[in-house]
Length: 332
Image 1: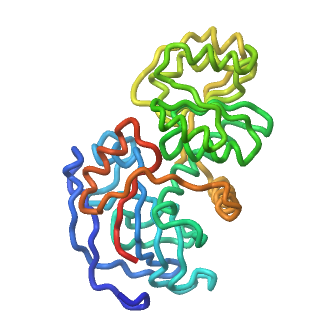
Image 2: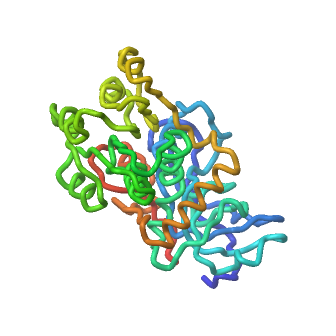
Image 3: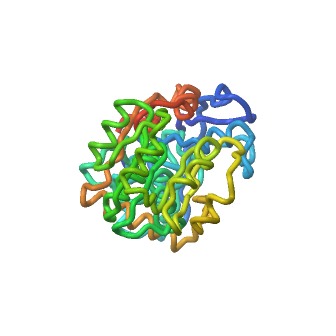
């Protein structure tokens, strides 16, 4: 299809009722038309994030009006532009998305200018779709909420998923010493390849190993992906004045407040939706700088056809994958 040609209709995932992954159904819908300050991006790929499974199930605090198309991350080419769009965002340009107006589990997405970012030639469309939520969350956890500073030691608890890998790469980019955990040999090898010191979080003695690596001092910051499992022990791994940035949790947890009190430690929640426009712009700028330098390089675990979106939702919640789950939306 020529890049300047107007599409008549497109395939998209539509959710007409909340429930199990099977509610993700392919439908043919009219192509969106960009208005003032808007762009239509033809999508090669879309990123799949855990939060989208919570929304789909109906168990999230903020639910969209039905029917809807899931997804906020994607990558492709600019297909059409509306009035008032900057000339730097031209038809045919490769871009990655940090959001959309219509959802990215589709062959195209309607976007505002703030959603659209240039994709360097060295970065594939699959990698581009792995950027938005994971890398912005990692940046926010480390620097906005975690207060990380060069020279500090960070533990990334669960570093082999999309956000964990992003946190590892950002931490190395900004001069932190990185400890990271993974549950498989392959995952730990990946951590080492990216400059981290790897630990097996399925091993009973890994807490003592981490403390030994710091000569008993503890770590300055923990980025926690599964707080309901790890938070109680996280507090005992912190140095004085240490922080835990909680990115994910799948249930309640019991902690001993004395562990926080004796270290004057902080537990800080991380919610990407709480970012201001200025904070978001800061994160996008850091991501773009990292892409241009080659330091940030998303790892794709699996690419799954758009028609198999239910399987993608199952995969993103499974343990053991290394990298990001991606949907293939269209051939570009």
